[in-house]
Picture 1 (tube, rainbow, N blue to C red):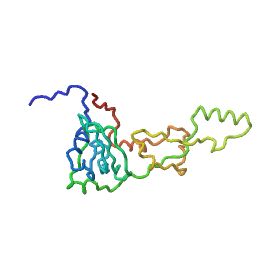
Picture 2: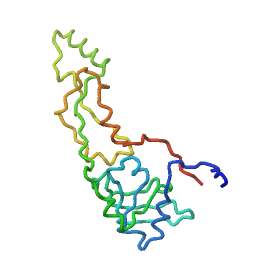
Picture 3: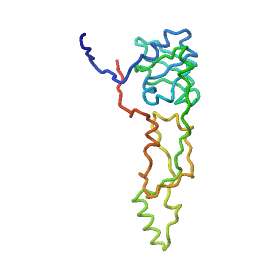
Length: 205
């Protein structure tokens, strides 16, 4: 058997087909069918993520790369509502779920739950130093609430859809060390699942 040589920019993480390669071969462009990405299957094998196609708008370009898909997105077993998909459709990573596999594929015993994050974090070291210096000059002691600031979470664009399920709560006490970096990394690494993000450059004209 001859070795296969990939010439050019090959997407090594792609294991499926372009989305429009699949939908263009189905009746009504696959409205009502289930599609998923192999990337989602690798990241969260026990929490299925998939799209129930509701409306499509293909551009019917030469390479079947462009277009929009509106679908009911189930993310890790949790229904996130209807979303518009218009990016990364030209990655050969999409897969159609056959009708006889749908019931088994959509089973999920432990769906993704609400992401609880604190609403306060300790002051950064330099800011705390100046606050203590100012309080000393005024002849008073800093109160506990003055050592905390509001946390405004910065959400990676890949997880922007999780804003509705993020819940900031005051029940999570600040880290005992008083450091903004003393945070359990598993809370956030769990968002990436079993595969850390990698930079993928799609083919261009």
